Image 1 (tube, rainbow, N blue to C red):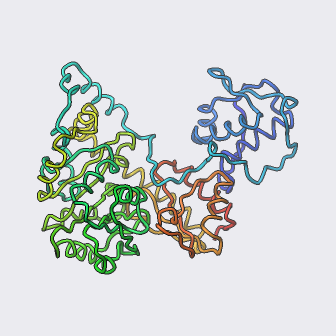
Image 2: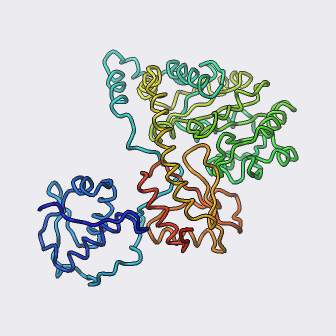
Image 3: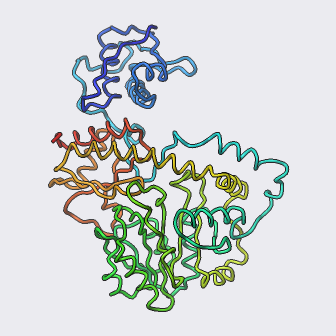
Length: 467
């Protein structure tokens, strides 16, 4: 067929995919699109309308789900006969909202999603091809239990250049994720230790401590990060913190509290800080926040990080830098352990880092995420003062506060009803609180268009008008 004419108004608050869905559906009902008509491919229609293929996919997906069109593999999308449909609402008026299930969430503001569209597949494939070769047959055997030296050497170089962490490759332990490394750290710290954790904080750490029968004391977090005065009043020996971009609030541990926390750790023997530096690569204003490890003079900081945000979650490569005072203890405790990360993956990553592809990828993604963040902030500003936000200096999510009497749970349900998945701050607290409802808005996995459309759709579902 000739290119199907669809009129879009990008100034409307109605999402683009819904405008496309509405017009095709109405044209089928009114007979303007006859039975058997083949619709343009997602790529062609996306190019013609100057929208993403994802937008077309959402529209076609909803039309297929409701039986207006039929998808035939390797052939395309075709208009179905009206009389074959179980029910058709014959009206030009668009439905207020589409039925939502777990499979048709349109906008997922997950703080854990990354941008997969810009992954450097060509470079990664090149290094994978060079690594997976008969000349590398020794990589089929077990390697160093701490992880292969080549990768630990590259990580040490990267940490010194980017985070001010001065360590040797021998101090680095490679593992298959924070959830695998953290239990090992817990074990070498002893059974009689008490941990202090941020509240709200990363749920995984709550589970890890409880599953290993370790007492964990929740420490309140405010606009300056963990409350160190509160920490000093507890019997905790170990403080687990995310100082460069507190999860989930997004705050940065203030300079004064950084000094106070380091002084707390050095005041007594056997006190340590576990510094989780999970997404510090992405800072958008000012200079990078220095790692606590780099400020530490007493070897009281255990540094831990991962490649989940900087490269891909599925890589399953994380690492910890142990103070030298704990290194011998770790080697004695885990002398019979082997590395949990496949050696081929370690060497692909080591090559990727050695030639500078990792640094260039970070620079590129920093620019991309900064643009996405700006779209998010510019769109949210249109709804002030009914909403406010924080934590926009670093990372891949911000915290959104809604100034309303409606509860966090109710707002979450309203968002879900229009195809939006949100993550309330109460999800990350050890106990739920009333008051101003707040949410994490992750922008890493959404396109700029999806961020714009998703925010407007979200505010409409909450009854918040443009200011």
